[in-house]
Image (cartoon, rainbow, N blue to C red; front, side, top):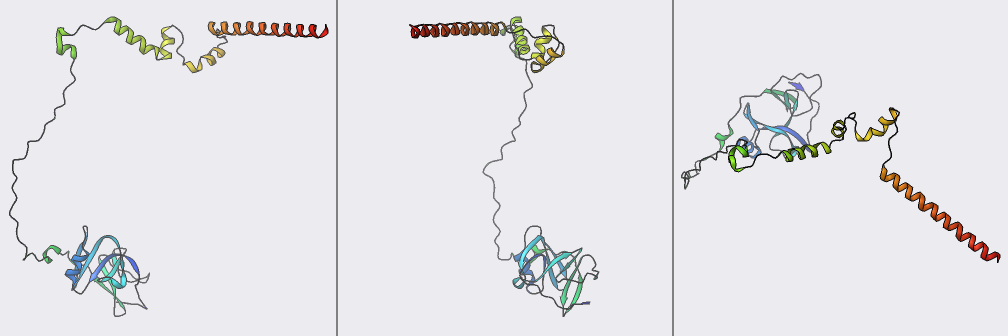
Length: 235
């Protein structure tokens, strides 16, 4: 055993296990949760939790333990102390006592079921329904299914669908017109790089000419109004 100067555990600690020495079975069942394990350590019962569990040390049902490497310790051991794996190191009489972890225990054997009454087996009122089989229907050809009841496809409809598909793709429109396949966003840049000047839109040119004519007429009218006002003032 390794001598210890002083040890004291108080407050809330994250315990990985608890070593129970008094009323061990009842206390182990009270601490039990899914994922816990129970082992025998001499005459005591070791309950290893599924994960760190906060416990108040002075009110715990047993000695709180935490993992240090592969060993469970209940006190801060010296750094030079070498502890074997699968053991419990706890202070006993001012010294560190190391005990090996024994075989696992079956806690279900500690539950007294003598006073329990067996309930008669429950039978179903009707047999269970058969499972529903969902068969995915294969893709069917409507014209082949209805035969002569459906008219043959119209060439005009096919031509219209092809035209609409081409109208939504500027590359396809340009390729159909015999020009290079370019996107709409870079047409001006491509024309400048090729040294060509794009033709102005006829509608836009007509609008500009009308605006220019209206502006000239308005200027002439303003000049006439000014001349009349000057002549009237001079007379």
